[in-house]
Image (cartoon, rainbow, N blue to C red):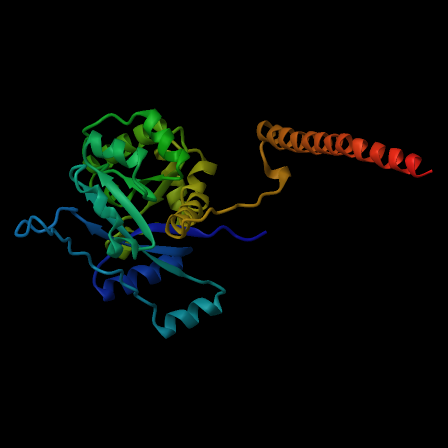
Length: 302
C-alpha cells in the first residue's frame, strides 16, 4: 500500500532564498506537495483609468531546488511537487468577474478570502474557485451558515485553516482555535484543509504534528489526516477540472464504499438490467408481425 502524500497548501511567496529554505525544510518534514501562495489584496484596478481598470498580477514563481537537494531527496526515495496558488481578497462583490483574468488562471490553485456576508455567499454559490479561506486571527464579521457551506462542499470547494498565525502569541492562538472550531462545526467536519501559511522555516510543522493540531480544531484523527492528505488531492483534481472544463473520475473498489452507498449501485444495475429486458421484449414483439408476414407469403407461393 502506498504511503500517504502530505501537502502544505500555503507557503508564503517570498524572496527566492527564503523559498529555497522553506521548500527544503518542508521536504525534510515529509511533505511531497508544496503550494507557493501569492496574496492579492484587492481585485480593484487602478483608479486613474476608470474605463480600463487593470490589476497588476505577479506571475507564478517557479522556485526549483538546487541539484544537491534534488540528489539528496532522490537518495532517500523522496520527491517534491511544487505548485502555485493565488489568494484574492474579496473586498466587494462588484469585481468578482475579474477572477476569470488570464493572469489569475495561470496559477494552479485559485483561492478567495471573503470579507463580508455578500462576498462569502457569492463564493459559496457561484464563484469558480478551489479554496475559500477566512481570516481566523480576527472575529469573523458574518455568520457561517451551514447551508452555504454545504452548497460549497457539494461544488467541490474546500475551506482552509492556517495554523501558522496561532504560533505567534496566546491571544491570536485562542482566536484561531475558536474560529476554527466554528468553521469545522458548520462544515460538519467535511472539506477542511489545514495549511501552515509559513513565512519562515521555523513556522513549519511536520504532517503528524499538524494532525495533532487538527484535534484542537474539532477534527478526529482520520479527519485531521484527510485535511493534509486526501482533501488536498481532491483540491488538485478540482483545480484540473476547472481549467480543462472536463470531469474527473475517481475509481474506487466497491468494498471501500460505505454500506449505505452500496445500494445505489445495486439499484442502478437492477434498473439497467430491467431496461435491457424491456428492450428485448419490445424487439421480439416487433419481429413477430414480420415473421407472420413471411409465413403467409410462403403459403401463398405454395
